[in-house]
Length: 429
Image 1 (cartoon, one colour):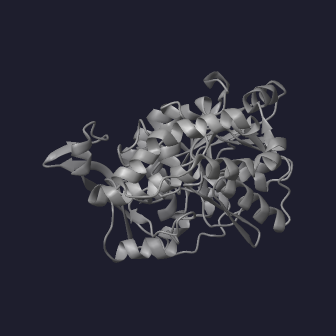
Image 2 (image 1 turned 90 degrees about the vertical axis):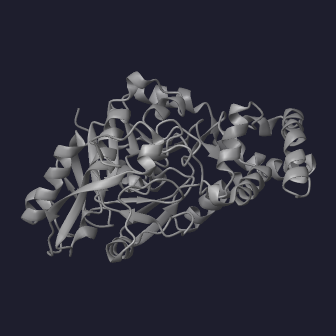
Image 3 (image 1 turned 180 degrees about the vertical axis):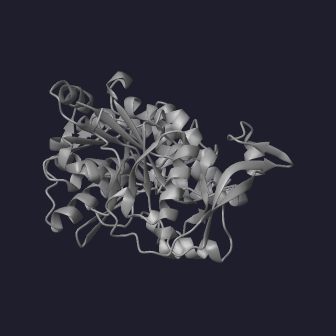
């Protein structure tokens, strides 16, 4: 049975949680393999809306085992706050498993994230200030703290002391902040140990055993391709591997076990934070998309930057991830437009680029070359087959499919769980 990877195609917020939820009833395991609580999924179930930040969206599906993989950085305060909030709403969260090798976000990571961003001034990356980048930096620098360290107080103390030796010099001498003591970090982390212990497992072993047993395992990426630390718009990226390759490194499941790579892409484009965005809109069209699409961050509440669909980005993401299927979300948001522009290539100081420029400077200066498509005014939220869509909407989808280099298998036409058109079953092999 398949291992299915779900990744964002653009800069995040494409609706990955909804795609995971669409597979929910036939899925046995859902794995979050990268990121932390710096991104969120909004999932609508009936009349209920759930905003998830750290937890995999599969936690909302009865019978599914949600997993936080080793590639995630975990803020324990956020983890248990989310679990408590879901429990209070009647959701069973008892099946959650957390990798013993996942790294932890501490108070000093959050502090460093915030003061570093302020220090950068106009050169800010646009982080959420939740300590994600500093936690990943410690992981790479081999001074990080892992989940398993909470169960050996002596080792935990040594690791905190080692991490703070350098960080306190930076906080006090560069940022003029107070030093952080080992005891305060130790006390905070240990306060979660007893509650965390039953959730901790060798999740890589569990997932491989599940695939051996014929279970369906969905690997749910946080952020998106254009925020990947290697393949995104560096340095305006996240600090982890948000592409399909990260599903293996972030879970302990080999790439040969991944059968389907599903890319989630909006019918237009958004991003949060700094960095290049060739199709960005600053006029009433942007206000229209932001208002109709409610483009405000699930985690931060920040207004998202909005722009038209960018075909070169989708082609790039298809290539980098090996995408087999696209889920096109929020097609209904475009209803009411007389014309819909699509970016088909870029103009960089008179040179045409049909693919993303390899040079980041060129991408910063890229202007969209737009092709216009007829819009539609009919309400499409009730459409459940492709033929239910107005001709102009069908033509738009088929044009995007042709430009994107892979099949559009699912189309989202509204926020509800059932507001989708399935052109090809994501579990078909």
